[in-house]
Length: 321
Image 1 (tube, rainbow, N blue to C red):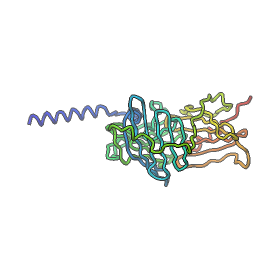
Image 2 (tube, rainbow, N blue to C red):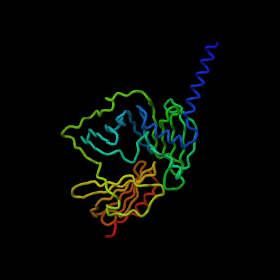
Image 3 (cartoon, rainbow, N blue to C red):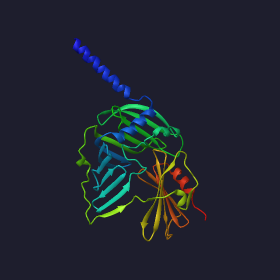
Image 4 (cartoon, rainbow, N blue to C red):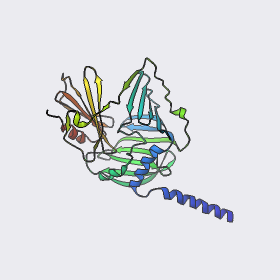
C-alpha cells in the first residue's frame, strides 16, 4: 500500500511539473509554438488544402549544433523535393531536370508559421485561446488570431499540448470561411533522426539546369521606386534584384510582412504590347494585383485581402530624377 501511495504521489508530481510548463495565456502559447518549430526534431505527414486542391507532403526536421536541416517531399502529383540547410534552400524538380537554389524567405512553411518574436502580433490581431481538440492522436490547444482591420486574414492554430509543435493551421477569410489549411495526419516529435533521411533523393547531373533565385540585396531607396502607401504593421523584410531574362533586364522583389502575412512586390520591365493596365486575380490562397507604371509591370501578391494589395500597388511610383 505504501509503495502504491508513493507511486501515486510521484505520478501527481510529474503531472504537476508537466502542467507547469504549459502556458496559460495565448501570447505565451504563440512563443512556444514558434520555438517548437525550430528547436525540435520531428518527422511526419501533413495535408494542404485550398479550395478543391489537396496535396500531401512528408516533412523531416532536425536540429543539432550546426543549425536547422529540413526536407520536404511531395507525396502526390509531380515529384518535387525541397531541402533546407539553415538559410539555403534547394528545390529539386526532376521531371524538368531543374534545381532552384534560393534563400529561406519571409513566407514561412508549415509548421514554422510564426515569427521568432510573435509578441508584436498583438498590435494587429486579437489573440485568444480556443478549445482543446485531438489532432494526429495528440491533445492540442487552439489559439485564435482575429485581425483588427480588413487588411489581413485571421488565423486558427492548434498546437500539441505536450511539445508546443503546431499540428494544424487554418487561414480564415473575412466571412469566417477557410481559405487554406495545413494539418498533420501523423507526426513523431523529439525522436533522433538519421542524417541520411535529410539527403535529397534526386541528384542533379550535368544535364540539369541550375537556377540561382537568391538575387542580390539592394536598398529600397536605391532601386528608383517609391512605396507611398504602407499597411499598418507590415515592414520590409526582403529587397533584392534579380536578372529575369537577358532581353528583359533586372527585376526587383520587395517583401513586406507583419510576422504572419507577407506581401510580395515584383517590379520588372514591360514590353507594353497588348498589356492590360491593371487586373485583379486569385490563385489558390493568393490574391494577385497587377498594374503598369512607367513601362514596368508591377505585380503585388499575398495571402491578404485584395484591398491590401491594391492599396500597396496604387502607392508605387517611379522616383523623379
